[in-house]
Amino acid sequence: MRNPLEVEFLGVRFPNPVVTASGTFNYGKEYAHLYPLSRLGAITTKGTSPRPIPGAPPPRIAETEAGMLNAIGLENKGVDAYLKDELPWLKAQGARVIVNVFGESPAEFALVAGKVSPYADLVEVNLSCPNVHAGGLPYAHDPEAAADVIRAVKDATDRPVLAKLSPEGPTLKVAEAAEHAGADGFSLINTIRGMRIDLETKRPVLGHKTGGLSGPVIKPIAVRLVWELYQNTDKPILGMGGIRTVEDALEFALAGARMVAIGTATFADPYAPIKLVQGLEAFFKDRGDTWLDWVGGAQVR
Image 1: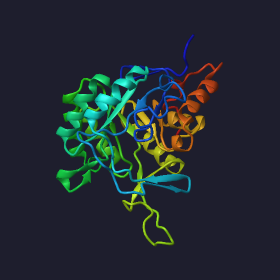
Image 2: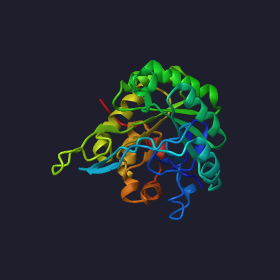
Image 3: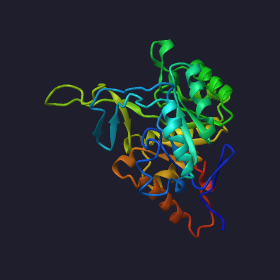
Image 4: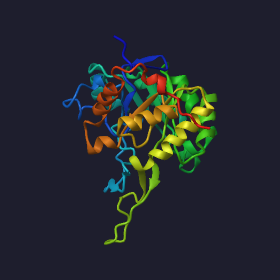
């Protein structure tokens, strides 16, 4: 029987278009007792770096109206620990795996990408992390620097490479530079910087002062940027930003997202990813069309 949700994305077959967003699902172990990870389209791992990073000072998370702020500080155990403890386990669950990688230089991005390649179906390059050689400016703000990273990663891995784009940089210019450097596809958007201040202490709520804003509040921005990118590239897009419901996912599809990632919603409901899969299955049951028929179908005049 035909599966209306099946997606081919950069040569990889996914049973459905629902992916977990990086940083919201760790490496999946905390969720595996709730539902089979293989039921999801793919698991995107926590950002992985060459060395362990302790992360930002607490508090690290704060709720906002229609979303949340986080300042985790890219905390992770380092690639060697994940190769030992997490990635082999995740592949053994039958999950498709997208490994999110980052570093302080193109060489460090490449090092991590090369090491994780045996376990990755796709490699996602986090261009929002700071370029220490450019005064801490994120790679996502500098098209030439972003291109250097993509070239280094492409040389280090035989897996398809996704460039993860920020809504705060010159998104389309970075995408163009990344595509010319060899990026196979794109994921977007990352969080938007925000801040909350405690009225009692008169101090920022987050230990890092500012943090990344995510959740439903950023969805209209994400839909707009996915749509704009879809008009300017023929590379496939993994869209994210405030997705919770079937309607949200379909809106991203119409804007041009071939796959979608669910992130912040998982903090409120750990079943959110599998509920989205089930909701899409119910939506397309007994219909004559498929998920892919919706991709890029927005009628904008």
